[in-house]
Length: 89
Image 1 (spheres, rainbow, N blue to C red):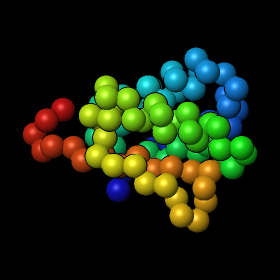
Image 2: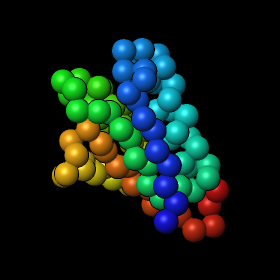
Image 3: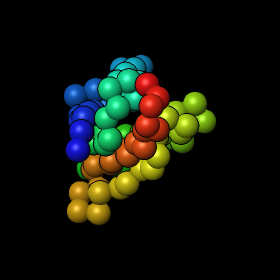
Image 4: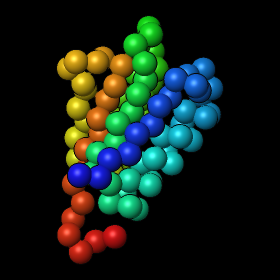
């Protein structure tokens, strides 16, 4: 299973950097046919996680992935699962 990880701890207060990091990893996952992205938002107040979830719900982003999974054991982590069609790049 191919997996990528993005830790947003270091840039939690930099709006533009968060958006760029999320866009970059989503595009990489599609391009490299990655099955799962782990996004670490940290536990904090939950604002960063809400921001990430809003980003993932955007129509242009939503069409890239299959489903989102909230980690039941660690609420500071999300998984974004992809289902790549065979024969497509």
